[in-house]
Length: 301
Image (tube, rainbow, N blue to C red):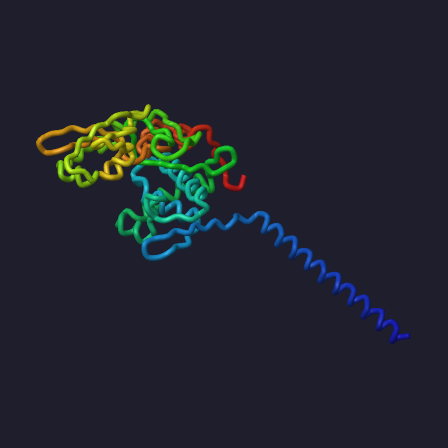
């Protein structure tokens, strides 16, 4: 009889132990499932540089872009607008970019230290504040990340996307940016070419250049050089002009191109963002002004 009771006791203990093991497994599974459902996805940006390829967490990458693309002296709300634009841009490129103006200029921590010296801690903290206060916010149009183009300053108006790049984009339309001409200290620039330099640039013997049309925003649309038609963009790129808003004058020194603004002119003007921030507009006001009918939301929403 004693042997029977001992066996029954052993079976009962074994059942309890098995039950406890299954219970613990269930608890472990539920905890793991909850954590996986609530964990922020791992957004890592692949940045191709001249010498190597970097893998950088998204929010750290955005800090480096703002450091490389916008003066840190700008207002925090302007920096926030740049943060959201930079974050959206890299996501629209599927987190794969280079570190040039073809994508976005990105500075590593070492480059920031070199550029800022004793102001490194203060400047980086200012940008990190802008990143944190817009954490994981992006812009979308009809549910898709927008191509959040930006540039330094305009001639007073931004450019329709189709007037500079190929194809119309609904949210990249010309808008007023009158602040640029007064807030940007180098908005107007002059660059002079000798007749020989201009002839070499266009592959002609004796240059004869004439602007034949402008866009609605006042940027050069077409130019004829010795009978051949070029777009304003093509002329800008051939001559490394600040923008495609230019006038040409001829003197004894050669051909002088007077430009207004800096950059392609499509999307957000950085100096315009700074001016709006100084007028107490917040970063959402700035983004909604420069990008038409977009939605600002969290990546995860």
